[in-house]
Amino acid sequence: MTEKKIEIDLAVCFYRIPAGAKAISISKSQMWSLIRQGIIPIYKISEKITLVKASELFEYVESFKVGNNGNI
Image (cartoon, rainbow, N blue to C red; front, side, top):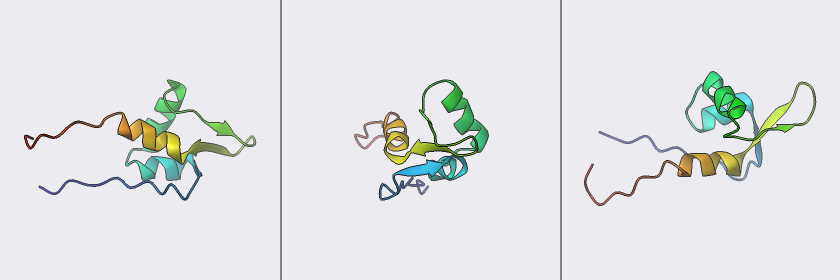
């Protein structure tokens, strides 16, 4: 089975919520849940613009890293 690789474009500094969710392969509602829980911080630029930092999304995904010694 081929593993889907998640790629986050670190050349992009910030994502709006839908794009950030897509970047880490979760739904927008899951993203908002993580934000409400304080797991992923947001940057409120204006009343209508909320951003998440690409590097913080990367750190969130990295927190699930599992060492692979050849056994799956």
